[in-house]
Length: 539
Image (tube, rainbow, N blue to C red):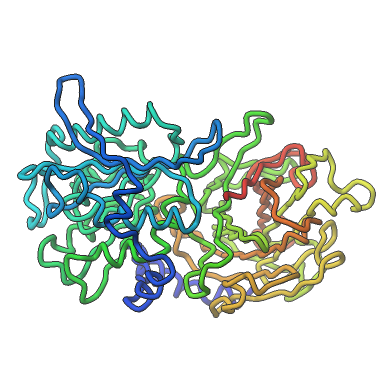
């Protein structure tokens, strides 16, 4: 572990550089290639796919809108809803132009990936605005009341949520330019209402940024925008981060003017990420068992390799206050002492799990570097527990581990060692260890589909995720797992599996001090499958 400790001073510098939430934006060439794979619908196709309607409120005020609802929804199925707010150039009364930017891409996306969702796109009349503020100003104070048209759009949204089969935890807002201002305004007027948002070249009230610390946001802006200053998006994301929010990100496109929506909606990760978000961090409860449910984002098997990113999925944060402490250990002193976040994704080949551990005292003294059999629970380690057949056994280690054909236990220690005492790896399943420290994932690993068998582990040391959630004294250690479905004794992708994550913490040598789990039975969190959570593999 000395190599890890000597790198700690540089980690503080890295954290400071990443706190603003900047991401690597898609290139113009990448957007062009993606448009060839999934081209936007033409305006004629978009209008044919949607219905032209007019909303009338109780006072008789009207607002035209277009609506898309999938025709083949199953009975009882509830799907996401996207509210789309257009820009100034699409104002009018034709009830059509509001689909030009964003609507055509959203509809093409749903058709290409067979993703059901509802689209609601109101049209602002000429001379009106979603937000009554000058677009070229460097700042504005949110008006006490929403504009006439935005108030109508809010009433329309409430009406559609009541009338249509919508999942209330997956309501999203996106908009461009004038509509980008509208998105920021809506988020600040209704904190906690939207699961996520994509405002493009807009701006909000930075004084109200604290209302948005728990809202996943991806903002986009062209650095050469001469209509809406790029500072408007940048200042909003910076203000959210300064208020303790870790979920706001910004893509700025060098050399791009006001039409940054072409690049934003032309980036496949934008809509990938949007539909992965759920209000409340992606966790709900199974009505039959009461077990916590988390969702794994789906990845289309035909996705071109250059766009294949397993990690456009929501983070689930687990602290000592929200997780389960192993009864045989003491509780961590706080989130800096031990906490973690995780996210999951899948394709038809297997499952990815990414765990980011936050710890202020890294140690790995029991397991030799690179070992494949050791007492992982006495070191800094992550363990993944899979119940591939959702058998929910009270003790998955019964019969000498024979029942581990359901999935088993898989571990990675901070120094790259893997545990096999009670696990399927490596005694049952062949696989290799990939040590990520100091390097990027091999392309074949990210692409995933080329990995036919075995379990790939990876680990790195950095600190990028949790400003506001975890004190900066903690170091982030990332663990990456890949499981083919065969590792769970399956020949095909299941709809859901039993699932749990445990993080072991050794502070300063000897036996472990803490063990924190996402969920489970505190006396047997590693083997009592009946108390595991449930991982749903989204379609």
